[in-house]
Length: 216
View 1 (cartoon, rainbow, N blue to C red):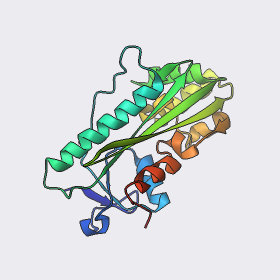
View 2: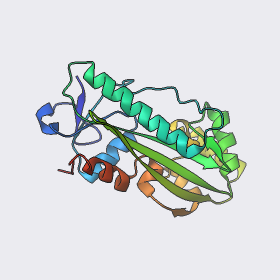
View 3: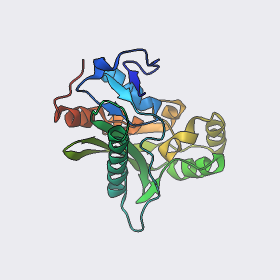
View 4: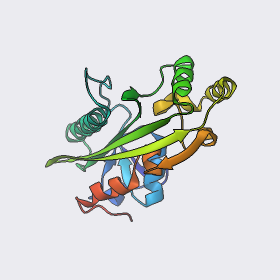
């Protein structure tokens, strides 16, 4: 059965009745769970892998199209998992985040060496963080896109090595977490802090509101 959340560390003990006419979250990201809890939403988590899709960029695909496509495909996959199993049929919320530097898409690093390379390229530069949010229900899929700008200070190779050794960058788009140790690298931010974390709350609330879903 899906796991119900009111807090990021949910145990699944809450009744599914609490999320009647609300939604499922199809994401493995603890940051997205934390942000939804911060905003006061109740939701149910779909099982791991229910919304997995191929995240390889298509030839010539620009970053905005890429994140919107992935969020949409994840939402469709999650909705299919709900309708194909013995779950309550609720809307499915998904999101996808990528970092963009000079048009190049920076997803999650493959390993520590890849993370070091990403951070070396971002150091002393300004880049964009794009997060797309998608919500699927019986009528189709709606999306929203958040675009933020982040400026890094110069970062020494020793600082990069130390940060990567912490393990924090290895599951993050662009190989850093704005809410974590990488905060000391950031000079300026323009846009959505929650969007840089992985779930822009303004756009998410707007999207959920189209189905009459509001915080508790």
